[in-house]
Image 1 (cartoon, rainbow, N blue to C red):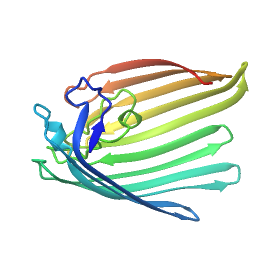
Image 2: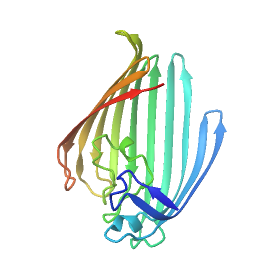
Image 3: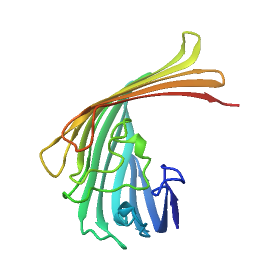
Length: 236
C-alpha cells in the first residue's frame, strides 16, 4: 500500500500511497525461463504531483531468458513484451507497449552484448515504470528516469572484462557501454551516451569508479551531461 521512491522522504515524489498488486509466474524450459507478470498499480493523487496518479497503470507481459553454450562461448539471450493501460485515478487514456531483445556472448573473462529496448509513447504519456531500478536502464546519466511523452528507443552495446589476480588485486572488472536514443512516437534524435566503470577488489575492500557522458539531441530540457562517481565498499 506504499512505495518509498528513490527521491527521499523530503521530496513530494518520495512516497506513493495506494494499492499495488504484483503478479509473477514462471516456468523453466530446457532453453530458458518463461515468466508471465502483471503489475496493477493504483496510486492516490498527491497535491502538486500529477505524476502520482499519472503512474496508476495496469501492465501485463511476458519475458523469456536463457543461456546456451557454444564451445567455449556462452550465449545469453532475453526477450520481453508488455502492454500497459491507464488505471485508477489516472486522468490520461492510453494503451502502450514495451519490448526488448538482447544477446550477450561471453568468452572466458570477456563479454560482448547488444540490445534494443523500446518504451512506447503517444505524445502525452510514455510507458511508465515507477517501481523500476531507474538508474540501471537508459544510461547512467539519468536523463530518462521518466519515459518521455513520445517514448524512447534505446539501441545499446556493452563490452565487459572481469580479470582475476591482476596487478596485486583479487579482481578487476571493467564495463564500457554505448547508447543511441531515439523517440518512438515521432522522428527525433534524443542523443547518445557513453558509460564506463572500473571496479577493483582487494580482500575486503572494493573501489569503483563510474563515468557517464551524455550528448544532447532533440529532447526538451536535456543538455550535455557528465557525471563521475567514486564508491568504496568494505565487507566483513
